[in-house]
Length: 436
Image (cartoon, rainbow, N blue to C red):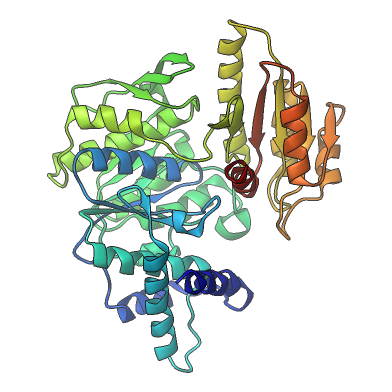
């Protein structure tokens, strides 16, 4: 069985080398070929640039706490491909992964000489839906990949609610060159008559989303930044207030030091309130409080070792949010003791490296920056990244294990290490931490 699981992974990892982007019509047709799994399930559909995985994690935690059997499909994974498919927070087993892989492969083979073959993301999505069809969760949470309108998850015809997180500049080669164009692609998940919850932090973006909702005759419910208020920040996490109008509680605790998670938790609260008002789910205030406090999402300012924080920030908006959290943590920490901060950084070449590095350099939050290389053919050249930092103190160590070891051994007592710039980097560091 172990060998079969490895072979399944190898096949899926090889897909990008021989499959081109498919049309939504082809994707929907293949979904029907699989007998349209999970048509009778309640599905929450989540799109956005940053934060959609965190929103999914908060929803999962609260719904499990409320007694719902909950399926989750997310991307990307950090270390283990099985992270993408979960039931009640547990990764799909290797045996079940192999079984549903075989079902999709068999459906591909039956296609005969036709040109369609699922892409990497589509293949895993179809596997997830077949797994959930067998497991019969009460609710399934689907996270889109990089888009919305043409995303494989959009082949599911009738979710009970759609959620759009913050919109930022990322994947512009696929989604558009402006925030409005990107928002239009993300808003492609809006379905006729299905309520929409969205983060309203930009008037032009909100106008695009609201127009899509109006066209689909869907109620649109916003979460505005000014409705969220930080109440407390310390080593235990964050207390913030948000009033949804449905739950009597307005102050919540998150077990994280990532300030941006207030927005994602508020989207979760608002979505559950809308579903509660429509009698789609029943989540008590106590379940909401406990579920949010219990939630944990890997790679989002996660303390992977004492004083070592891993964040998946990989685009300009993500880096800005990351820096805000580092600044808040630094201000709180320095009330207790003086300490230095070190950043381990890398990025993919197609990302807005100059803008991200400009934000980091201007922040003045790090006494030393170590630039390294991630194991990807799309990795940005290390020397080019280092040059973008200008006159900041930068140490170049190409091999990641050596760079990470350097950070651990060279830091002063009490100092903190932050790792950011790429989800690939986050995954590779996580693998090092778990491997010892």
